[in-house]
Length: 275
Ligand SMILES: Cc1ncc(COP(=O)(O)O)c(C=O)c1O
Image (tube, rainbow, N blue to C red; front, top):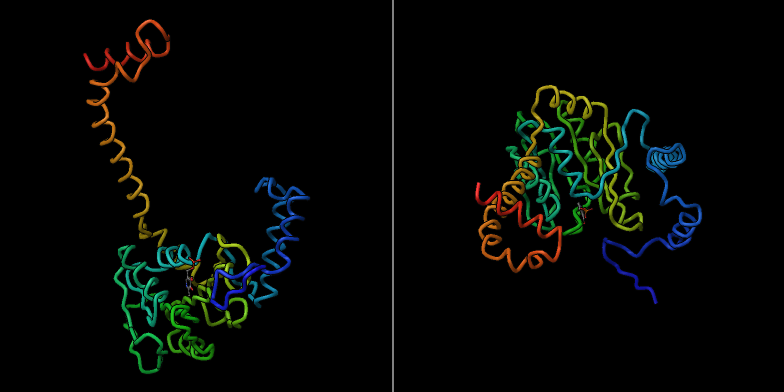
């Protein structure tokens, strides 16, 4: 018997999913090239349907990513040069704040006790703030922010971008996209889909900010530096591996004269070692 969990998710998949998956297999959709016109048609239909379902205006762009956590990174990376401001009242709003720190930004935070909401009017938002971040439904405590308060927040700070996490309230929460710049959710909760897909809805102002940061060369490339780090580790491995191979190569290769590739390796190795 299928189990029903009364938790925010990952949830039991929507009842019609097995049928859709079977259809996708029957129509060979899983083998489609992502550059084919058939795939493009499916993609554009998904975007159109999503626009209709969530009332997303034509002005806003829709991006597909892999998780809500990844979206937090992309939002900070693309829209913050230095300062974001985070309303923190639980684990996920705190994660958003920490993401900014990890990306070497200098975020501000207004923190209240777990289980509390915010009195937005009474919070002074630092003038240097570029992006305000709120978690509409803080899954870790169950505290939901009123949509009207989110609209007021943007109205009171029209010069700042506003990011709204609706991971555990989509598609049921009704966001007014004229007052939100970066709205995101992943699909393993209210959509009842398998995990591994997230949606980010972006205003033209946020796109402009991202272009500005790209042109300024201000988008941090920490991730690439991290890759470099692994590369250095591989060099270290090689350095340690050579002395090991020097003493062990007789046991690692086939006996001399019994295998041409191993004889070749032995020859090359001895040549390099003696150089
Ligand atoms: C409010 C909220 N934000 C962000 C996330 C992270 O989303 P994901 O698990 O897709 O990375 C979650 C996940 O539970 C969440 O509930």
